Length: 298
Image 1 (cartoon, rainbow, N blue to C red):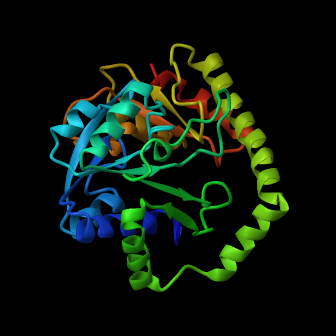
Image 2: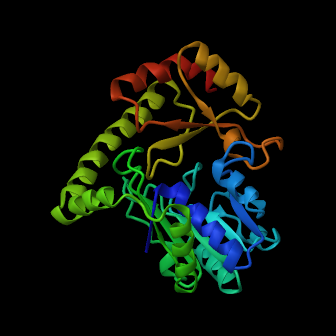
């Protein structure tokens, strides 16, 4: 286990170790996923290391593993438990297909984000348990506690754990020990678990407020991706223009985000949708915001 300064440093350490020690020259990202080379720091970091970037589509079962093999990538970054941003769960068949791909010389970088905040369904097991020798499992305390808590971790396969640790040592010689001790105290005293239980209730209430507001003001819109985390996806009519909807909503003082910004190939036509975060929005603000833009949502 290597402690990192948040998820961003963790994935950069893994990519550098894979480039130097694992023979990786191309890494694949989910599409939609972390976004285009112009918008996402993780993709830009890979390119800056001299690693090629490929994009593999996501459908209702998660990453299309069949297209991963054709991408030429030797490593792939995935969010299997709650795909970012669509919210779909990688199906059992795709999980086995992905681990089979990895066992034939590939590497999987698993972003275990949102695992602490699931609502209607049981937690989803990590891919790392299926192929521990080929899967890097990354996590962070930033979402559970606060974005300013820059602590993350990398559970690396034994063959490359030392290489990741060496990259960490060269990067900054170690994350803040005081922060680590504070987090350890929260864990050992049970306060971390109590905090998670309380925040699940808070976020669940905001989630309920969002779904209720849509049911009242935009009943034709079927929200998806709500099994975990802090956001939902609202599909738009096929003829809608995401950019125009977002601009019109902004004129009404409502901030929206389009799924187009998460696509690796934003210039290719794809179904329009909105990614609607509710984690940092008070319940009382959700209903008037949805009511204000309901007519824009189709």
